[in-house]
Image 1 (cartoon, rainbow, N blue to C red):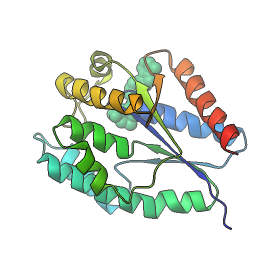
Image 2 (image 1 turned 45 degrees about the horizontal axis):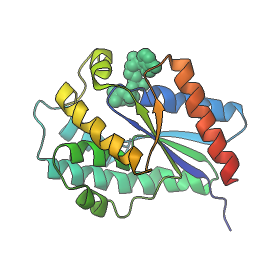
Image 3 (image 1 turned 45 degrees about the vertical axis):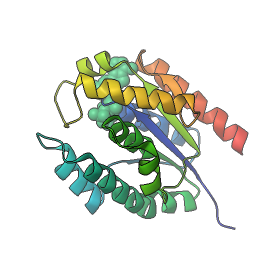
Image 4 (image 1 turned 30 degrees about the horizontal axis):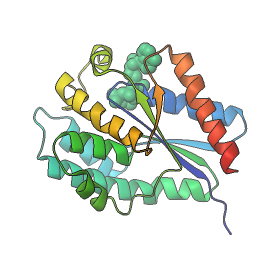
Length: 200
Ligand SMILES: Nc1ncnc2c1ncn2[C@@H]1O[C@H](COP(=O)(O)OP(=O)(O)OP(=O)(O)O)[C@@H](O)[C@H]1O
Ligand SMILES: [Mg+2]
């Protein structure tokens, strides 16, 4: 049998620290001798690039159904090109955003969570999904420069509600992201190391 790595995703609102902590986590795992790989959604592939341009970097949102479908297509491409190959090499693949971003953002915009789950039927379940919880008011302050159409207080509040629901349903593990970076990083790392120990 081939080696099987692990698949971890980091979720949260815009500017909640996902990229900061996904990078730090990968660095800390590498320092401890694990093989780890950082990756992100939208992916760095052709479909991901299109999604960034067509959905995120524009003034008005495209119809939410279009958002949900395009993110789902990029996700399958991302899984096939990056996540599965990384896991096959025995790596711990850390994705900066994943399926729960679709549920939270397009769910917050009114789409049925069951339908979003259905169109993501082929999305591999992560072994561990972390939600960095930061209040919407704080993330809006952190956002120095608007990068996407999702970044307003009303949207962020609704997105947080869906994330919290997913935490309550045990799909995501909540970590308080509204503290000094090193404290958040320590919690993320110890959550992951605990999980790796239990699953080894
Ligand atoms: N715990 C923290 N306390 C204060 N500032 C933080 C903390 N974590 C991250 N930041 C800062 O917040 C900003 C956004 O962080 P980062 O880019 O990691 O967030 P993100 O969730 O990846 O955002 P995006 O959704 O835009 O990709 C950065 O300037 C980062 O340095
Ligand atoms: Mg980021």
